[in-house]
Length: 185
Image (cartoon, rainbow, N blue to C red; front, top):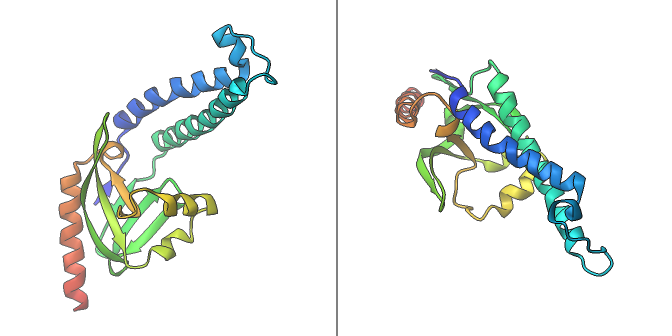
C-alpha cells in the first residue's frame, strides 16, 4: 500500500502558516515601536527586547513549518509505504526511514485533543525508541524527552497529511503485521 501526502490538506495548513510567518517576520524586522506606535527606550523597560526575541522565535518556527509543508507539497515521494516487510515512512525529522514489523511493539489510532482542534493519528510504539532517536538531531532528541505527553508514541502518522482514511491504513497495518508474526512464529 502506497500512501501519498494530501496536497489539499497540506495546502490548507500552509495557508494558515504563511500569514503567521509573514506577520512575525514583519514584527521582527520593523520593530516594536513601528507597529504599536509606542516609543519606549530599551533601557527603561525590557518589553521591546522581549517582544523582539519572541517575534524572532515565532519567525523561525513558522518559517520552518512553511518550508516543511511546502517541501511536502512539492515532493512526489510517498508519505508511507506499507508492505510485508514493514513500513517505509518519509519523516520530517531525519528523512526516509524503514521499520521492520519486528521493530514495532504496538500501534493504534489516537486522537490529539486541544481546545481548538481534534486530530487523529496512528501512533507507532517501537521495541527500541533509542534506535530511532539516533537518527535525529540533539535538539529533537531533547524535545522528545521533554514532551509533556511522554506516553505518546514516538512515531505518528497524522490524518491531516495523508490522502487515505486512517482506518484504512490501520487495517492494512494490522493485516500485514499479523501476517509477519505468523510467518515468524
